Image 1 (cartoon, rainbow, N blue to C red):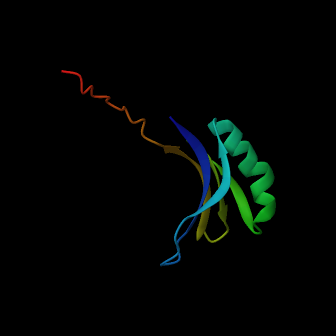
Image 2 (image 1 turned 90 degrees about the vertical axis):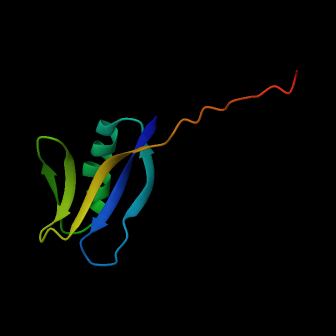
Amino acid sequence: MGYFVIIVFSTFLGSPPEFLPVAFRRNTDCQNYLTSKVIKEYKYMKVINDKNSIYLTNYDNSKFIICEKLEYPVLKTIIKSNAN
């Protein structure tokens, strides 16, 4: 299980990735939001559409905004009985 989230990466040293506060069940929904809404919030970004994905980058390729699936583990709980 998991959700697609939007992550902003920068190539500047010491800059941690930033997660935007939205999540999507499908990658196509995430990419549509990225290319229609997020691109308006970040100046000087362009849409890159390669064979595997769609993402945003600035013109000097020092910042990237991608959709990525975050998986979370499904924990199975074991219930032990104390009955003897």
